[in-house]
Length: 355
Ligand code: ATP
Ligand code: MG
Image 1 (spheres, protein in one colour):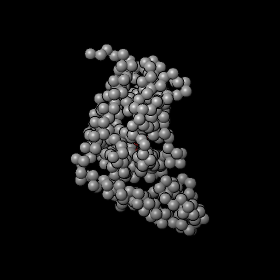
Image 2: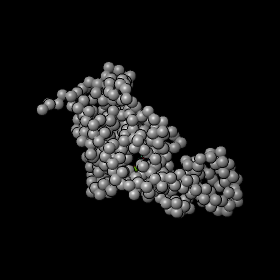
Image 3: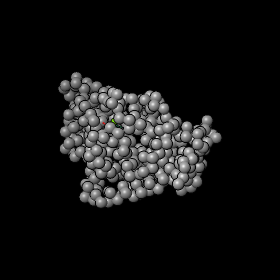
Image 4: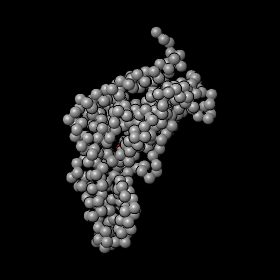
């Protein structure tokens, strides 16, 4: 690891923070259920690529404090999802030799930093956050939204800055979160001097942003029950694919079929490795003569090829839960050290009374 001067932004040229770092990546998930193939295209594939590229210090945060912000009445759901998430991570190929797995609630600095950042953000600004606004609506909170939930962008800012993250891979829906973090960094550094590292968003490439659910309605999402999970067995995947909606006017094999909006093709676009062959299949389907059964068989095979090695790794780790826990303990221990350094810098910059 080498000393690196982190330049904030143009207008922040007067406040630059120097910390020991390579490119630091922070990413993570709320433990609220298992990961699905939407997560694979939307975030896990990027993490695997960053891991394979090397040259990054990668922290993967299991954000259980954040999951509690809208699951306070069902803490067991959050607790039980922690190990499931670890199993999903290891199954997909994230490797503790290259990434640090961190349990948010076990890192005290992540709970203290928001106490300082909260004073730098107005309530009106929080309520304007489009991601949060949308989530409050879809979760049906109305005026009963928990304070912790509205506040979670500040908690995310704490997570990102605590690790001195320079790169934050985000889904398009999460971009406003990073904007909030950048604002907090700017305000903090302007007020208390160069202390926090300015992070940059890494957005997924457009074509792979958002995978629709197996029902074709909106995005694949745990809470909508329209997912193919990474842990689904081969038969379950075949069943889910068989039930997929295609083109309702494609009744006979000889009928011309519609490719656009056809969920089976959307999935083949995302997962079928031979895009040239896929273009031929699309032409064939449009002309007529290619049946849904054959197409669905191809899709089920494609998905099962992707998921088979994940199932194998998961089965291994399910038999070695102590090892899984030790990976989480080791990553969390490292996180405690790094984030305590940031916390000390923050307390010093503000000028907290030292006992
Ligand atoms: P919930 O139903 O609880 O909201 P979810 O299944 O939508 O869960 P999230 O935890 O909200 O999953 O997703 C976390 C991140 O994973 C998103 O910000 C996005 O980057 C990625 N992601 C989730 N679902 C998809 C999807 N269908 N397509 C692409 N990316 C996705
Ligand atoms: Mg969601």
